[in-house]
Amino acid sequence: MDIINLLITLISGAAGGNIAGAAAPNKSLGVAGNSIVGLIGGGLGHYILKQYLGVEVSAETVDGVVKAVQGLDLRAILENVGASGVGGALLTFIVGLIKNSVDKKA
Figure 1 (cartoon, rainbow, N blue to C red):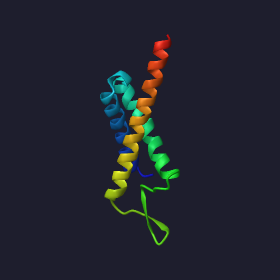
Figure 2 (figure 1 turned 60 degrees about the vertical axis):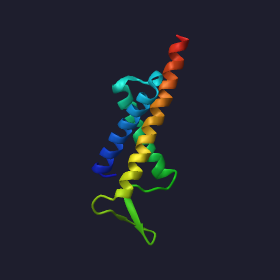
Figure 3 (figure 1 turned 180 degrees about the vertical axis):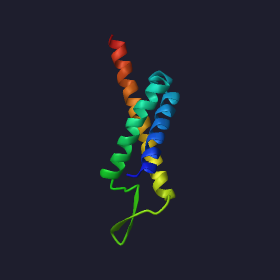
């Protein structure tokens, strides 16, 4: 993963975490908490998309051979943004649920 994809992954994950926090205020961890959990979730979302679903977001294939993308590929960027954003949002929501259930027991 090059630095551009890493930055896109982290920013998308943080944005997804903050969007999830805004959409479900009772599950929100605060701006900093949503951002940190979103960063982690974004990285996990990118990894899952790449490893388990077989989608390569930073390279293209030609006749079954992977070659490096020269410049920015819009499809790869959108896949990265989508996977990272959804991963960040999901992890933020899950951590918010866990936090709320622990707070209710205490």
